[in-house]
Length: 431
Image 1 (cartoon, rainbow, N blue to C red):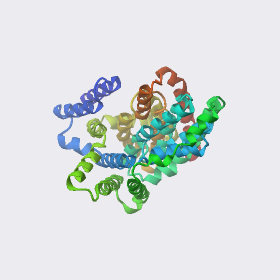
Image 2 (image 1 turned 90 degrees about the vertical axis):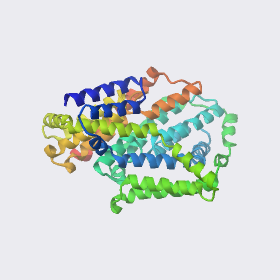
Image 3 (image 1 turned 45 degrees about the vertical axis):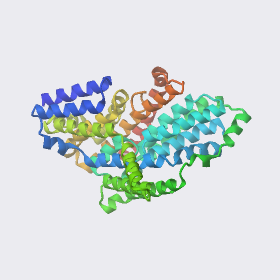
Image 4 (image 1 turned 120 degrees about the vertical axis):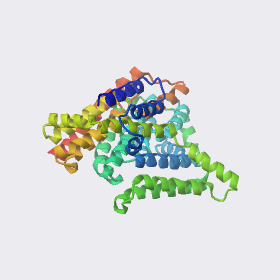
């Protein structure tokens, strides 16, 4: 138990410093656990959640190919034109578009697609992009909380508990919607009256032809068809008794087939290889190593012991456990990556279930873990991958986002959204 704990703590400390590649760190840590006799190679492979990996790989391929059609850029330009290039309305509408895309795709992909278009629009309107970037970061993390596929912590929780796409929609969409409305109101109050653009600059946006964003109309139709069917598959998965990972991989395979259909042999093979290169393999191997690493801690008995301690602290109160998990998850996720934290919490909470009345009774605690970890992603510039990506794009565009300046907004937004989540959980489950 001591050895497993020591290896995990050292790995997490190295991850926190960001001195080494995160996939390398967890893979080395998992191998050291095997060398040290904490677990065998078979146990390490047993600990890997291949459903989560399949879901991630499948969605990365589908979204990566769909992006080539220009559909997401089209949506951003169309949104700007719909609100008549009004900077105030644009702030609200881009936040909503970001939240919706983050729920249906994932928040990292969404900001990669929306933020560059935001800079183009801001340049044409001659306005500061900073309020828009802030709103999009917060909206991506909040919106991604609403569904199974929107944020990695939800993918981990959903796969571990065999929850359906609609389970997340039913339980989390109401609080996500309320939080988004609050965010839009706050941003409009803080920035709305200060956002102004000249009529000539607005005209330059209205003259943009969003249809030029569509680079491949046939691919657009194929992409929309596959995305729609995959999401429909997620919704129907609980009735079909098919894992979400299988649906995502099948969707990716169909997408690659349609993408390369009717091409000569050499071009077809090139397109398929290109599709596989769209997968972020660093993230996939990070998840695989992390699963093995945490499983070593689980089979050593550490997480079960911690689960019993937490159950004793909660004194059998589901509400006390849920509120503790919510706030602890949010605060820790502000300082470190929420993925390893959630991966560690899942087996610990599972070990608590018998003492707390079983899975059904513990569900508020699981939803608290999701809300805390995802909303906690808004707590600092390094708290979520989407935040880091937006900061990187902003740096390239000569609009750097200061860590401290961001903190002045991020901490109040995080604390406010978690407070809304706490109120929601109280009235939803304990009132």
